[in-house]
Length: 364
Image 1 (spheres, rainbow, N blue to C red):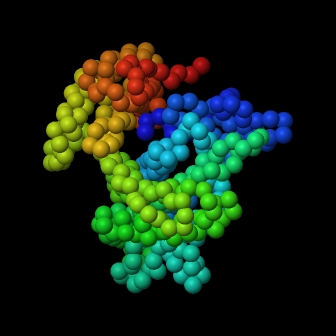
Image 2: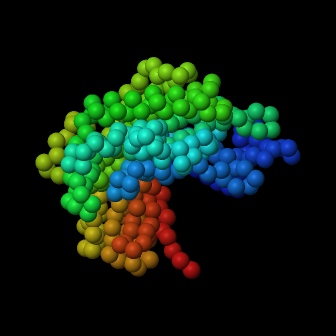
């Protein structure tokens, strides 16, 4: 989603009713609407014990990291309502444990979720790319107690490897069927392991599977299914129909339906208007997210070559007018205006709003 999935505002500390007392070490950040409140402990935001741990391959595409985190929170909202649950960064999975689980299985690392390497010339793929834990809390007297958990598992769609050190890089595509199979096998193991951790025996645990985008993709991957487990085994998987794409689409790109083609045409018209305003626009591109075949949000980047503050002010106002005219209604959209060295302005519209707002970044 375009809005941050978990907005942290340290100046606020109210959770619907009473969130802290003279005997409590916990308060909560302010939340509202569709956003969770976060946990503050002893005056500090409670950070994850393993956030950001992933297989090295993932560093090649930072979009995977961002869309994985925001998408995982969106899945959580299907089960744990922000109105009744407080979000807490994962506290059960440590960095060491997560690194072991993401490693290959071996005599030294029996908990590895990835297969043994095999031969150097034709190694077995590293399937499981990243794992993230999210904890969901409820107020219990003067403290917060763990009442639910979401685990995200990222599965590679392409495996990159080298046959020799510093040799050429090879790649192997991993089919959707294999991504699904490997993800579900890992999920079953992760669930059983989480049940053994203190406080996790009886809580509902949501596990969501994410298909990683290739390294050269200009967008991240997407979650394709999730399950809610009450016991030690996994039952029904619920399919998620999500897709991210880049606009404008090349002429060779096949559009899935007439609506997608219309979205692409509307963006192309918006892009033409923006580029006609100033002669020195380097590029106008967008990341578009679809849910169940419908456009659900857009991130647009406009790269400029001018730096005058008055030019940026006029340009951002013009972009807001063009966006209101050409871009679809009813979805959240943010438009980032930036040069090669810095962000200059932001034009945005939140979900449910019909008016774009502008903010120019200045300095004193």
